[in-house]
Length: 324
Image (cartoon, rainbow, N blue to C red; front, side, top):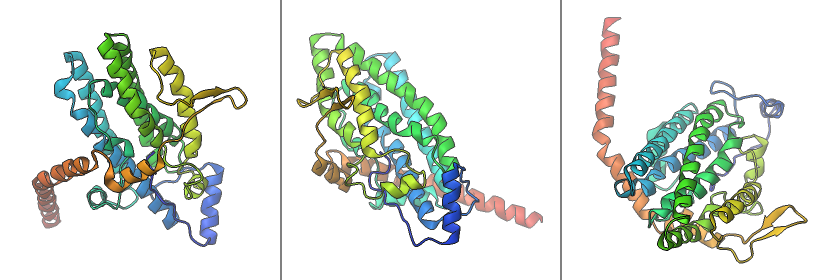
């Protein structure tokens, strides 16, 4: 989901490339000071950077509901969840920095369109039930993608994912709890829960990226163990896990063609609208402009903080130099 528009970069192989691939094949962990192909480094920067951006932009749809949470308990839980997402972004920006890119540069790439964030965060959260759907479906899909990344070949990324996965598990349970309360509440609350599922189901399926037939760069990323599973494998696993949960809640997945296939041992389901998916990634989602505008405002408003920190660092460096 964090490599929705990441293109792997491969070039003609050298002996160093072959030795590097042998390390990957043995299951070795690659660390920042190890030699790595430039294509590997750039692919990691794109994937980790877009993952970090997704965590930060992902705060916006939920932050919108902090002041409107129905109870003090729900407010505290949502505050903690949004705070976790900020931390996840920080871990990931730090991991990306070990590859020689600054978080300032990553942010500029997001703001000028060279980097993206997960398509799901370009959709609006219209009701409180959407907080349940985001936790249950969106964070559920994130966990499906992130757990395998704990075994990814690049050490700083894999280690960052350990804590992130633990916290995302809490987020998914929080969302399911909201949906359970709504589904077992009044008729209006049940309708709200069903409406949230109706609107978020197919965008959640899009989170895993285009079908394998369209994802032409996955093979190289998987060869490098940057990516651990194909898009279709993860999407199928998500459907198989989530449909029984919807049935438990008494909600209906909005797919008339959804059916259990005895031969395959999986659910058959309708593919998302891929034209919509690519339009959203290009910036034509319902909230795409709002998300980037909010991020740009935060960047501009924080300029004085960055300038102050740089001035302080320069002053300390000058004092240390003078003391030598």
